[in-house]
Length: 270
Picture 1 (spheres, rainbow, N blue to C red):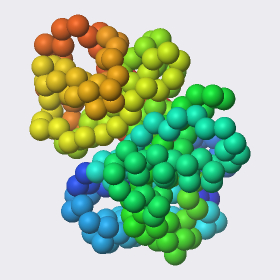
Picture 2: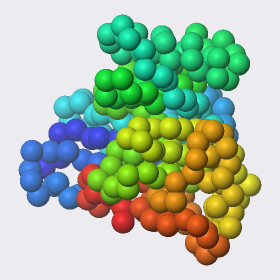
Picture 3: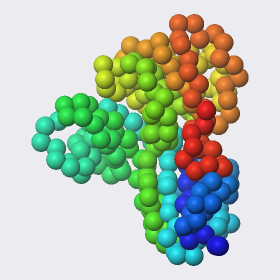
């Protein structure tokens, strides 16, 4: 039976796109079907990303019901992160986004009023993680999805996707999460039951060794003005680190690749 619809998952990273297309049908036998995967090299311009995405979706499968969905995950260098302090009187997502634009604009010393800002949910009284996605990239992708009759089911950052994917394994009371992207590292530091620092910055080595990873972690702690926990969770959107030796003082937990496994929908890498 032809698929009723297709769920496309798109990752926009530094110099690359990855599109994973999985069939959805009413048959339980199709639940573990292998998806169609495309990895595409792009230049870091919105025009080239838009063009290559058009080409990739033209080659991807399409469902019969015109209900195909698009899950979008954006990574570095297209995202800026920050921690937004708690503020009373903010009642909805729009209020938090407007407040976060002010905070992020001050943090990056620029006018952030045109940024597309997402603020993660959080507990009462606790600071929240905010992410600003390049507005031109966001608007172009949304416009293209609508023109292709694709329903946007999710739009988040590569770092948030990793946190969601491995949330059940981030069990330490205090930890640093380090996510390697293509020549970038995204990080989040958690202690005292809340996120203390979050960000992204370029790194010199796409496949760092243990000594270089330790240096990356120290840079992350310095940028976030936070003490660095000894427990470290590591994931990657690309090649594996060369080795994990030389990380004296850290207890490292390798989570696996942040890309989902191809054959079984929703299964985390391990």
